[in-house]
Image (cartoon, rainbow, N blue to C red; front, side, top):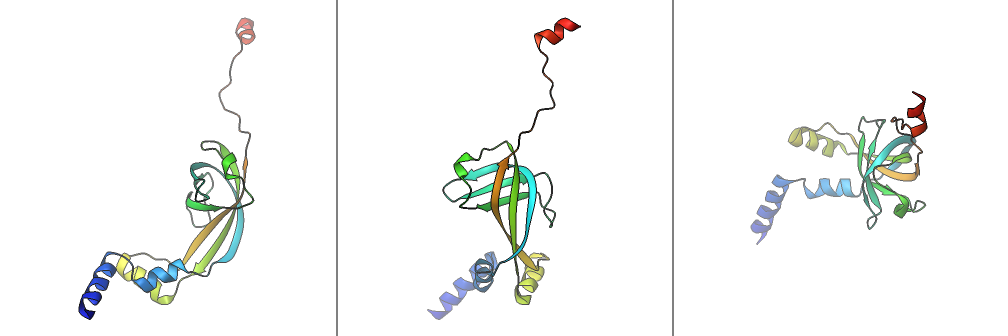
Length: 145
């Protein structure tokens, strides 16, 4: 019985992270790092989970321009958000340092050079009034020519 359990455990570790590593990431102690303003638009909105995917025009400090499953603050009315419109976002960034043991595992087994992980919270999203670059002509404009 003990051998079967050990064999099953080692096989699952071969296909993913060991349980201790998953637990370290899952229960990471995040500390507030920064609050930033960025513009972008919603790619996907999940009202049930109160999360969204957003595309940013300006990159985050770590270089990424897409945030997947950003947590949406209870202060925001998620039902008012619309995909495809430009928003100004207030994003709270929190980060957690990883243990030396996990950093080494990620480097050796997965070739990932990661020392910390980030969590993003959408504090506020304000739709921007962005005009199109296309100038529409009116019939009066055409008569002037």
